[in-house]
Each structure stands twice: as structure tokens, then as C-alpha cells.
Image (tube, rainbow, N blue to C red; front, top):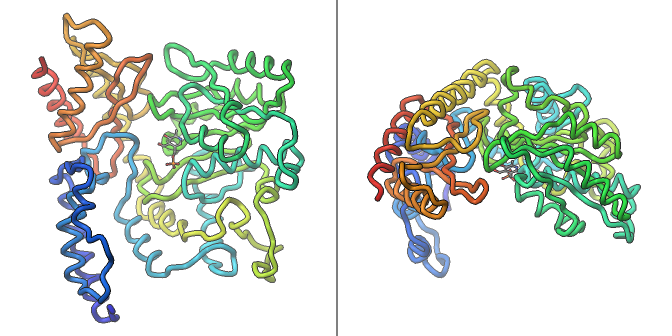
Length: 473
Ligand code: PLP
């Protein structure tokens, strides 16, 4: 078994490997090139009976595992939304792993609880959220949204569903056609039923939720004896970064007394920049809000900032007090086990503290401001090309576009052409992009937000995209 002396030696070796890896991360094929089963067949069917030297384990990690990794920390990662880390965040994660603290209640890790409280205040102020919001760190936006729906459900049923199960009432949840699939999961898990998720149509030009369509849907449901429970508005949809208009949606929610949850999983980081706060105009009308520092804000996965206006309802939904969890300080402190689903909690506030202090607010504004600036310049450049087409407004740092050469105008051929283009780009290992569909059109999604991104990476990627596209038959 590893002793302290060898641990120290390998910790140094691992730290060297980490620094080298991040220094050269742009040299790896961004998207892993392995085929299904390639990794599995290199891992023995049965675990070792006897101890193995750390050297062998570490060498196997480099030989077997690394080829099967897609390199999310490469500056040439433009796919999905980023899952950024950063040097200060990694250092904090190393310390977190070393402490191995379980942060279920204040007493089991007082510093973790109090640092979490303060970090949630810092983030609230830095991103312009209302003063009366209170925050807690969840693992993911999926969990935060589930918490919002469960709390809305309990509040609407006077905490009756937790107690006695579902009454005959059919509760309804509303979100736009473009909203994230985590909402579909949340309505299933919360027992509301997928048939009670209503997808509201979006405006044709910017794919944001149409508030008039929302109100019509609500009125129809009420007429039919159904009970509107919760509306989920998205700030920065996954497909195209569309921004739902919070103010009119919020006013409708107030009028019909419906919980408003706001999913700003990715775009929430942009609220560091005051010039983008128009995107959350009306946020004071929301009951809950989530954004993920683990996406664009240089903080290792997982770290999701969840805010609520009415913390008592959140706690009443989740609090259970068995004898063995009672402590002398329960009345005086935040026991975050009562603010969400899990009992056991990682010490996630530490990496936020490291990131926010190491970058400083201005440092974060500068890096994400650059991402937006470079992406918008590139979008303008793409828009000027006769054989490329911008497919959705580029409001932040994501560009939705497709290759559209002269003479190819039927939708099927254009879809095939762009699918092939993405395949070739990703097989090259030089960059990784992903796709979406807008009105059945296959569209390339290019998100420019990786921690180590520089303008030259964008420009190189664009040259390569043009070259590969114009090679296609
Ligand atoms: N909401 C939006 C808008 C997203 O884009 C995503 C993921 O990309 C999620 C929710 C889910 O995030 P998580 O992986 O933190 O659950």
C-alpha cells in the first residue's frame, strides 16, 4: 500500500504531469479518436488480487486512458458548452481531495458551510442578481432545476405531496421549445409526468419564448381544470443561445401566481459583464435561478450556483431531521443538506474562492469579454462569406452557421454536406465542434469560451473550416 513517502513522490510526479499536460494540451487530438470497446478491452476483466506499484498504474493511465479522453481543456474545444477548469480551480480541487471533507452539515465542516455562504453572496453581487436571493451550490443545473420544480410543487400543494403523495390535481410546467432536456427529466423525476410539460413556441427570428403563446397556453390549461405550477425561462439556450424575455414572462407568472425558474446554466457567467445584464432584465420577478460556474467560469465540474427568493420553502421541501443528524447549532447556521437532494456534499466552495481571488472580478470580465468580442468578430466574418450562412443571432460567444455553397439549395443535401464537414473537422483532431438543428436544418455550433482560448485559435479554426468545406464535393 502507498505510504506517505511514496505519496509525496508521486504527488510531485503527478503535478509535473499536470503542468506539462496543460502546457501542451493543444497538441492532443481534441476529440478522442478511439472506437467503442477500445478502452474496455485493455482493462482486465477482474481486479488485481495483490497490490500493484503506483508506477505501473500511472503508466497505464498515460497509455490506456489518455487516448480515450477528449480534451475539454484544449483551446481548440468549440463543441457543446465548455466545462472549463483553470489553474487556481485545479489547485483547489487537489486540496479538496486531500481534505476529503464531507460537508453535509455545518458541524462536519464549518469552514465549508461558511465559505459557501460567502461565495454565493460574492457571485450574486458580481452577476447583478437581486439582493433578496440566497444561494447554495448544487452539483449541476439539472439538479438545481429539479429542486426548483420540487419546491414549486410543494409550495403549491401546501407541502402536501411530500406528505401524502399526489392529489388528483394535474400540475403543469412550461418552457420553450428550445429549453434543455434536464427539464424533461425533472418533470419525470418529480412525478408530475412528462405529458404535463408544455413546450411553448418560440419567435421565428431569435428562437426566444413567445410570452403571448405562454399566456394562451396557461389560460387554456386553467379553463380545462389543469393547474399551472412553474414556468422555466432560459437565458442562453443550449442549441442557439436564445434569450427568453424574463420581464413579460415574469409578469405573466405573477399574474397567475406561478413559480418562475430561470435556467442560465451557461450564459449566467456573461452577467459579470454589466453590458449583458439586459439579458436578465426582470430577474427580480423570478423565484429561482441557476447558473453553472463549471461551464464558462473557469471552475472545475461540478459547481452549479442555485439561487432562491424564498429559502424557507426550499428548506421545508428538503429538510428531514433524524436524531443522528441533529446538532447543537441547527438554529444558527446553514446546514446545506437541507437545501437540496443529497445528504453528502463535496467541498465545492473552495474552488470558487480560489478562482474568484486568483482571477479577480476584473480578470474574469476581461477573459469572457474577449471570448465574446472574438466570437462576434468571427460571426461577422462568416456572415460576409458568400458560401457560408449565419443561422442564429450571435448574442454572446456561440456562432451557429452552416456551409451553403452556390448551387446547393435543397435542405437534405445541405444537411448532408454540413454533417460531413463536422465529421471531417472532428476526425482531424485539430478542433472539436458540435451541431444542432434549427427548423430541421443541420447547423454547426461553435462555442468560443475555453479557458486557454486566444484569438489565434479562433482564426486558425476558421481557416481550417473554410479549407475543409471548400474541399467537399
Ligand atoms: N441548462 C442548459 C441551458 C444547458 O445548456 C445545460 C447543459 O449544457 C444544462 C441545463 C444542464 O447542465 P448540467 O450538466 O449542469 O446539469
